[in-house]
Image (tube, rainbow, N blue to C red):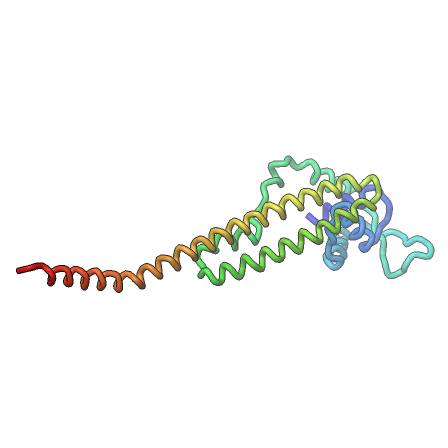
Length: 209
């Protein structure tokens, strides 16, 4: 996936280095890619003949090697964009889904700790996303609209996950309350039965023979 992201960012034909690619994608999506992964992918693209090293501009940092897309790269990018939606829109199961599905097999205390940590992390991501949405207003006008829509998409997903976690925490609390009530009832039941027995015996002793 990353290789096609990089190819798309290079499709205007202008030579560009890895750091500029990282900034360009962040400006468009609000997501910062790993610079290490970018440079590793660039090497793979060079080896595949999809991009080629380009001449550095006068006065540019010699340590940053620019790259330019090749015709083979454009062909590969066109094929990627031509894949029907059915081939990529069906999402794979995310790590959170796996964990949530197995919470019923864990003890209540561990589940409560997991949900508390998850809720805090989701809220933290929401605050960071709100900061990015404010910053998106300063982006270039040609990428501002798309970035804002992508950030809004992430915000809706985060809000849905937070609502789910809160529902699960309420369900867990209700289950714990029922468990405590049953435990208290089972503890007091023998005492109640004994009292009823003594009362019955007492009433029986008072009956005239």
